[in-house]
Image (cartoon, rainbow, N blue to C red; front, side):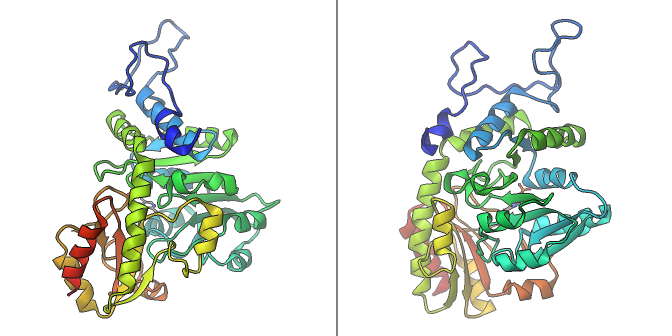
Length: 377
Ligand SMILES: *Cc1c(COP(=O)(O)O)cnc(C)c1O
């Protein structure tokens, strides 16, 4: 089944006999038992709920995982994942990571005795140099947020051969429509389902997608114990969003290609970071590792003043955190997504007051360009 078809038909819920085409919302906290020692398969919605299960099976099918676990947010998913690790365990993470993940790692995981190290994972030799005997997980975001660096997943997987180290990949930016990290050797895929999977800037969700059944079982235990599961109505919204994932990803990417090329020609734009530009250092790798580049663009402008003016003057494009929805959003990484990253660390990564990030949506590219052009004039 092709991905476009799988988004709609990968999971058929035959347990209900009504013929409902849309998977129903089971808004029930608990489920009655037929008799002592018997269960319908559903006992209590923290453990499992039919609506959530439908969404989970769909995400597992799209990513090619053994299972998928749905959480109330992306951060809830990552927090649960980190419960796999204990005092003395080391996690090696991409240095240019989503700000919320850095905050979790540095302020919560560290307190639990987990040692977090950062490296530029787009450089496989840097990963090799940073691995130690105690590295239990390599946590990768690709492309990175906001600098759009791409990690060679198969290259990193090769380094982990014979080690007791999980390859963990946050696939929020590309989604399984453009990249399937498990095919490249990932042991688990992470999503902020809030972004492209749900796709409409209207719900929070998160996913963990383990590649094998043994890891799935460990994560299921942690999820039912810590409890940040996705609510039935929100699961319904994610399932509905995924029905149009292919269309949305194609439309957003088409716009992103046009806008990145246009940005480049603007006198006030000093640099454009988009993996779909043929001279981006990771253009070829992105093509080998997936089927698309996504629709996230970062760009630098001549002065901080210009950056501020763009944020204030765009009308169609909303100045808001988040990404991956049908509406185009612009963010200011220095004070929004990366506000909790120390200024020195931000500067080292090029995240300064002249950097802006666009999550390109599905409006007409001409309208988006007109809006940006007006704001930049
Ligand atoms: C948004 C985001 C998260 C966190 O997800 P929430 O749903 O906001 O909790 C994690 N990783 C990436 C790459 C994100 O963009």
